[in-house]
Image (cartoon, rainbow, N blue to C red; front, side, top):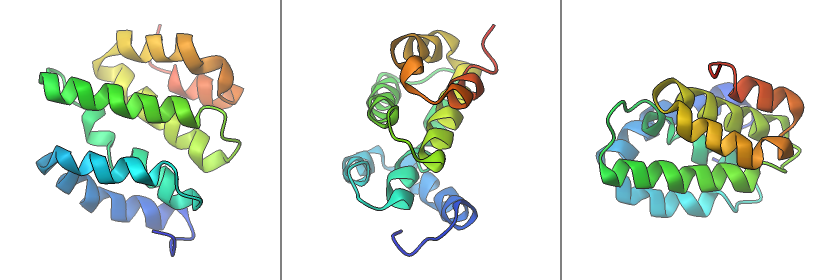
Length: 128
């Protein structure tokens, strides 16, 4: 991932990677290490690879735990000034809000003020 130089390349690779994470959620252990990488695209990939966890209407207890874990990563990114990181957090929370509005709202209540204003607005787009 450090060789990535744009969001388009990173996101295209993430589509394939996301399937592998959903197939074997133990891979979240490795992905969590990406959240501490110096490289912007590696940090961003941690959220993009895990987007499928936002789309589950009836998550299992393990999938709910994965969501909470990933929301913890989002919270850790809330102060990151990089546009691409802020966009990834907003995307993750916005997608989550379509299936679990209460959890997305709770995240924004706790961390929304730390996001860039445009990112907080984007994350809340589907919340009324």
